[in-house]
Image 1 (cartoon, rainbow, N blue to C red):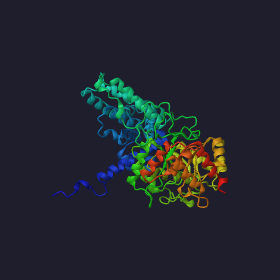
Image 2 (image 1 turned 90 degrees about the vertical axis):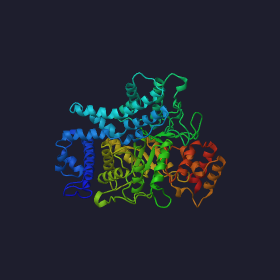
Image 3 (image 1 turned 30 degrees about the vertical axis):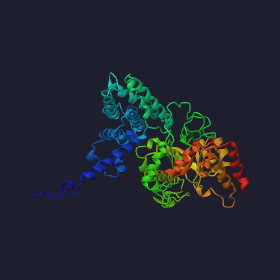
Image 4 (image 1 turned 135 degrees about the vertical axis):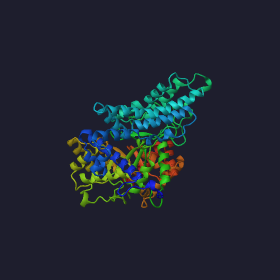
Amino acid sequence: MEPRANDGARSRAGRPTSEEAARLTEKLRRAAVDTFLEHGYDRTTMEAVARAAGVTKSTLYGRYPDKRTLFIAVSSWALTRQERDARVLEPLPDDLAASLTLIARAILARSVDPDIVRLSRMAIAESARFPEFAASSQSTTWSPRIQVIIDLLREHERAGAVSVSNVELAAEQFFAMVGAMPAWLAAYGIYRSPELEDRRLQHAVQLFLSGVLTRDPGHQGRPDSSPATPLAGAGHPSPGDGDDDTVDDASCNQTTSKHAGPGREAGAMRYSRLGRSGLDVSRLALGIRAFGAAGGGCDPATAAGLLARYLDAGGNLIDATDASADAAEICAVSLRGRRSQVVLAAGTSTGTGTGTSGGGGDTGIALDRARHGGRNSRRHLRAACDAALRRLGTDYIDLYQLSADDPSTPLEETVEALDDLVRSGKILYVGAADFPAYRIMKAVAASDRLGRARFISLRSEYGPTARAVEREHFPLLAEEGLGFISAPRTENRTDPTNPAPTARRQAAAARLGCTTRQLDLVWQWTRPVASVSVDISDVAQLDELLAAADVDLPNEVITAIDDSTAPSARL
C-alpha cells in the first residue's frame, strides 16, 4: 500500500498532530511554571495547573504522572530556555573587549530577569526536597554561558592575545564578576539602575582583561571598541571613568538646567529617583501612543527601531499608560530580549478598551460595569491588569497607574486591590494619573492607615502653557514624597487666545539655537519633574529631544518663561 502524501503531518482520528502536541506541551509548561510561582509547591495542585492551562486533568496526567515529576520537568525547562540570550549565539566581534562586553550584558540581563530570579528562589527553597532539581538548575544556568566564554578565550589564546593557566576557571570567574552580585541583589528585590549596572559591568570587563591579556605591547586589547553603554547619548561613546556622576543625586527631582556641565558626556541621559521609592527613571520617557496609530503614527518596524534607539541612548522608562491595544502589542514585540532593561509604566486603560482620555484604549477588551463593577473596583483592577499584562507580553508591570479617579468605589477597596496586585508580583509600584490633589491625599492616607502599598508618583499634563498642577499638586507631592511624571500634550502647547507666550518661547529658542520643543523640555527639567513622557513617532523626533540634554538654559530665560506662562500672566 502506497503511503499517502504528507502522511507525516497527519495523525489518527482524534489524536493531535506533532505540531499540536508541541503547542500543547508549551502551554502546559508555561501554565505550570506560572502556577508554581504564584502558589508555591505545596499549595499547587495538578487540578489548578490543568485549570490554568485550560486542559482536562487526564490530559495533564497523561504527560506528567504526579506533581513532583511536573515540578522538576517544567522548572528545569524554564531555567534552560535560551531566548533571552540569543545575542550570545550571534557572531561575536573580533575585538575581545567588545565580545566580552556583549556576553556580559547578556549574562547581566539574565541574572536580573524576574522570571529567572523567581525560579532561582524556588530552586533554593526546594533544594532539600528535590536535590536532583537543585543540581540540574545550577548546571543548566551556568554551563551554556560559560562555554561561550571558554570558546572565546581559547580562540584569542591561539592568536596569542590571551595568556591564562586555566581557561575554564577564568571563564567561571568572569561569569561571577558580571552576574553573581546583581543576581544576589535581585533575589532580595534590590535592582540597581541601568546606569550603575553598566558602569560596574564595564569595570568588571576592564579588570578581567588586565588579568588575562598577554603582557606584550602588541596585544594590549583595551576595550576601546566596546559597544557604547546605555548611558551614552546619540553617537557618543560612554566615558569609562565617569564614576563621579552617580544616579543617587540628592537633587534628583530638581536638577539644574546645566545638562551638559563639566565632567558630563554631551547628550548623556540623566536619571531621577521617582519620589521616595527606590526606582530610578530616565528624565526622558518614551510614550508609545503613536505605535500603530493611523495618520501620523508609526508602523511596527519603525516602532521597533525607535524603541531600540531610545534604549541605546540610555532611556529606560517606557510609558504605555494611555496606549491602545495595538500600541501595547507592538511594544511587546519590540521589547523582546530587552524587557529587563526598561521600567514599564502602564495604566488601568492600557489596551483594555476603557475609553479613557488621551486617545488610549479604543480597542481591545471592554471592561464594563455590568461585568466588572466600578473602574477602580477590585474586580475591575484585576481584569484590567491581566489585560495589560497580556497586551504588553510581560508577567509584571514596573509602575501601574490608575488612569482615572472613581468616586463610586471606596478608596480602601482600591488601595487593597492594588496592594494585592503588588503582593502577587504582577506590579511592582503604584502610581496615579490625572487625579485630583485631594483624592491623592485621601488614597495615601488610606494606604498608610491600612499598611498597604501607597502611590509613589503622579502622571499628569504639564508644560509652560499647562501649569495647573503647580498650585495644589506640587506641594502635596513634595510633602508626601511622590514623584511627578509630566505628560505634555501637543494640542495644548499654543493658546490661540494669547499667542504672546508662544512667540516669546520661539524667540528664546532661536537665540539659544534650539527648537521650541527642546526649550519646553529643558524648562520642565528645571521644575520638580522626575521624567517627561513624550509620544514620539519617528527617530528624527527622538534625536531632537535627546539633543535637548545639551541645551544650557540661562536663568533669565527660565524666569522669562515662568513670568510669561504663569496662570496669572495669561488672564
